[in-house]
Length: 320
Ligand code: RIB
Image 1 (cartoon, rainbow, N blue to C red):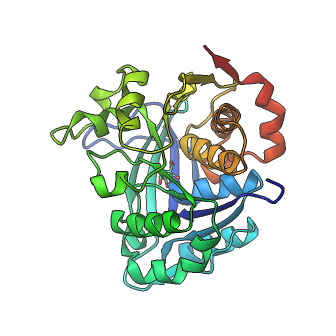
Image 2: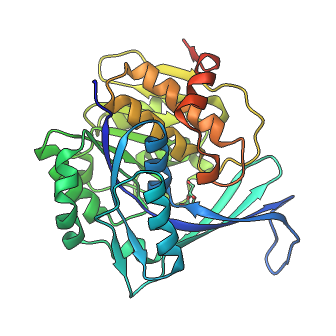
């Protein structure tokens, strides 16, 4: 492809408030943390920004409040060169917020209050139709209403664009109608386990640790083109119909904060897949971007530029 790939994202946006702690507080306990950080976040927006930093031409649909955080989001997207002309500003709800605890080893625990993200509906999709019509690939997460994702994916399919669903945050089974519109799914181990465990499961933690290839095989029965199971510090596994699995290990990095690492993977992987890279190379980009996102505090502030990803690409290795 000679032009930049065109991506459209249903971009959940959150104002992230993050604190580093030595351990998580017990019930009723007040704990002293450090390095408090307020920064832009939201899985969909993080992914859109990572894709833009990788060279994609990005447009998005998002719902923000009529407040300062919403204005910060719009200024951020403009600064990143992202077309946010279809964004909905809702006076009824505040911009989404996320409270994040980062443990000393960089592991994160996140609670979101989605606010205006949940206000998106059919009329907003109508406003975004011209942007969806131009896209090569459409991205969605589970932080925005599923009905909106289905509508956008259906429009993308009509136009021949690929659809990529990132199944974060974790939840149980998804509607078959959404799976039918999904070409590529990216899930972490806990999400993949929860999605394939049946309706009774509610907590992804005890389910993680299963065989990633078995999880990928189960998910591949639901989508058309590819499954990626992300494995944290063990990289990611890609499975396509009729192809052997590919497992890519990340470059070694000094981990500071893992917030947004999965989003970095999705944004970089989607950009390179849409650009026409061989899938194994797109996987390598995703894994490298994910590792680099762990080297700084916060989600957006730590998302790497294309040049930094390219410099570490040789250090990401395929495991047979
Ligand atoms: O994936 C990281 C993101 O999850 C954070 O930026 C937070 O906003 C939540 O959406």
